[in-house]
Image (cartoon, rainbow, N blue to C red; front, side, top):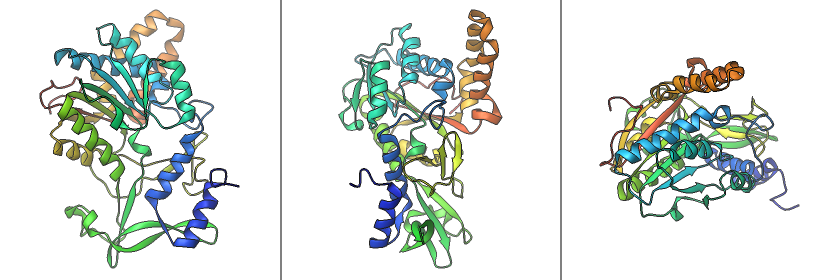
Length: 353
């Protein structure tokens, strides 16, 4: 049996026995790479549901946001719609349909590494151009970039304050079970200055991978103009504690139970990512709750219009609207971070910045 066919847990166990504990970032990164490589994880028959699958309103309002800021920036052509981790292509389909009414008909680029999802996206948006990463996306013309529930699946590092200082949390073995242990290398240099004297047992998460993505996107905005929306779950400011979780069959499961067969995620540190973007001379439009943002864009009015057109779907449309914006559902936990070129207008929905 090749490593490609072997259970990932067995591969990790062999690696740890031979070379010692591995980083959580490696565990998470390789687990999600295996998980996403060959399956469609979305929908009732998958492991989780994302906002575009809940209601067409979500994608439509994103499309109108993109069209609005592009029009106010001068309608520069060629213009590119870029989506990171586009799922089934549902968000793009709804967004582009709504935006086309206002003359926004961009070239479409999907950054996707899952073969299974690419096949579905090809049926949904056949005109799209696929990329393994941002490096091959054109550099001429502004970009309107959307990343919905993309950053949360990128690998995180966890740092823990022990008696001897800060150390990285590593994944080791206790018999056949994966367990956390503290690494041996001092990690004070990776800890923000205002956290270095935190009490013993404090855990901080960092995501160099997420910072790298935002750094590259912000650089693109500075160089070729445009705007970006990052929509994900997490707090508005950096907080202590582990947020690592795993989901399979719409249920939370032990992240160590079945690597490669569950979606591993962690909360997004939007405060850090905003600072990264500004360091690249992109404009931080703001970071607001998803509920606040969608209300500002008119989701309640859009829901009423859909109900008027299809009154027999009143309850279904209302439930979808509430799932997206209610405080006890996605409304508060999920955030929308907007970025733009320094010379582009402010985007709708972010209030005073």
